[in-house]
Length: 592
Picture (spheres, rainbow, N blue to C red):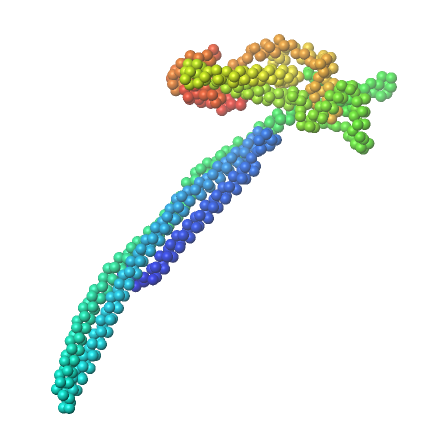
């Protein structure tokens, strides 16, 4: 089935149809372009949505993301960000594989169509010219024949007339013969032109036009195949990202399954546990004997009025009601000026205690707590101090890593002076040494406070410390005298002490504990990929294929700390070993 034979007389309709095919192709390109814009807009909205609900750095929201439910939500936000990236991939692939390719193809198609129809019009013009030549030859032959008939009739009329001279008759005869000759010439020309036209017409309708229409048909069929392939590509682009989108959804499902309500409940306990004992029973006050009336130290009025707190490490705290009960203010007290209330407060207690409590309350309201976190309950204070010690140790480790790196660089400069001046790093090394020393002093300070607060929490300490007799030695009048400053009138717990009542801890007890430092726990295993000769101090030699224990990960300096046995441990280059970390060992906390 060919357009050249079936549609030989439909030149104009074919021209309109092929133009419609190009319009359809351009319409499809416009459709895909709008689809890519929708994908980009959708991806942008998803990214903005994910960014909107991301926790802000150094804010309270960031602290809330330690729970499993909020971590799962954070994982969902991250996966939605990756999900949006896949829609951007869809847009990019459609733009390059469909829009770009089809746009170039449409330009080529227009040029090819223009060329084919130009050839068709040229063939039509040629056959029309031949037809006009045939018509002109035919009209000329017809005119000459009529002229010859008239000349013959005139000659016969002149020949029959006796009054006409012989010369006129001869002239008429010659004219008739001339016209007959012209008619014969016109007939011959007409016959030749007719044969030529028939030949041209045959070639036109059986050769030229079929060839041109066949090319137009092939062009149109290629266009149809191309748009079909583009539609298939349209589906394939979506299908290619389905596995990745499926992985994103699987990760969201995995994060949802990781939500642990028991763990979150335990974290709430760890976050808000104060470490105080519940209040003890209120003693009976016997008012039937006026001369022996006394005010119980654990009475409700004492806990509300004086605000004194006497810590008892071995038993229950008596009358400790301030975490749950607050004294209601009368309307008169609420309207009373702050200066009058301050003067009344100053006269009700020792001035030094009032000044410290007032200073503590002002500092808390201004958001600037004491450095030792003494404004917090014991358990929360212990966690803050432990966190501070960990942060300082990390800072020390970073400084030591920089120092070690600079030391190695200095050794390289000493061995190879052409690579640099070894003296140029001395100033930076001295700065790092000073920083390390300052940080170590800070660690000692916070460890002292941590030891102090752990001394007041027997349930959180080790068995050896319980047996050391520290609490029995300190649970005397010195502790009771310094406990007067622990409780402020508004119920906040403070740790500020005067120099006269500060609890002294024997240094020898803690020195022994810190000297007996336990070895670092293993966090995984590793396999030596190459042989390493540890010749420098702090390194360890390993043989290829040897299995060892990992006790410290690479902190960015290219070295990993490993252990062969209890006596042999050191650093090896990270690139020399293949590490297998134990996930259960990560994040393990030990309380000293």
